[in-house]
Length: 510
Image (cartoon, helix red, strand yellow):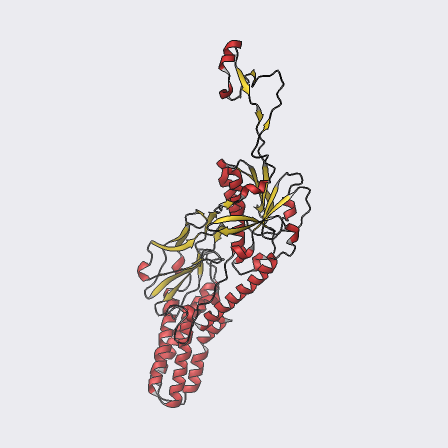
């Protein structure tokens, strides 16, 4: 609808002026000039419309703007000037105030000239025929929280005189918006544009392309938007430092004490046997070996404890988060992954064999994936954590093993599941790990919400921003209801993970 209104702005105001000014002779000298400019403008736009309807072999149909987009050249500022200029001419005709007619003629004439120039020198696909736009997010493989940098390289873009190249993009859904502007001095040049993006969010990200267009220096007209410069980058999660992990193994003590061997009354303080290839050479008893003329080794007088095995499961089973506009779902999942990997790292350093279990996308479908967390392959666990997203295709019961001795589930909402093995829950509460949604900057009749000259100060954009933030808070309440769990008494004895001075503290739920 907004496109139709902008196109109608090129036709309706001149018609209104023509009907109202017939009875006045103040504009007799300027009317022919305005009429000629309007006819030339209409011809230039019609030429671009007809040209856009023809198939172009050099530009793909996906990237090529529509024919009506070639006619939609006015910006909000240009449309406002057209209506104000027409109003000034009408007012001059009824009041006889010649100064208003000068303002109206200058306003309409400036817009008509800008449209003609834009349609002739920057319209169509000519500025983009030899253009190359590449976009990189550096580093391509980062760690969660590390600073990111965007690098855009352009070459071959034609920027006519009196025009500027504009580029706008957003790397992540809730990330910062990057904006670039290049003058006509950068036409056909190799340019390098950079921006700081802030801390890297966890996950594997596909960055949408930049939106690029040409606009005149007065901000009255613009060319159709083209999209170039896709990119990809990934950010590995940063495991948290967890306190109190050893309590998850229980109080049996089988992970810290050994069991003595059974010794007969006639046996000495140690036993020996023949050396077998693969035995520890440090156990060779050299004196007995010389006496028997063969290698013999000493046997220990205790049986070392078996390494405990723990299946550490990330519960990412949750439906409906794709439609939520708030930031809380992503922040909570990041916290779940940090706690999940932090517990696994701490258990592994204590001598526990840890198996990471979760559901991730494999070839377009979600499936359960297991990874053994060992020191020399810890990066595999980090990559698995980077791929974790909210999903509803694989329920939590599918991730649980029937005959496992120990299973620890890191979840934001514990619930009853059918399993024959004992399950220990580590709860990551939503309220402790998510931040409030953003608030709109305050404004008053004397101050602006955004810097002076910013297009975000327009009434329609401010109202749109208010609607967006209001929707985020509404979605936040919906998400909080999804995370609520009422049967707390049934999970008494489970552990809750909360942030504590840069670390993660585990506490028992009473």
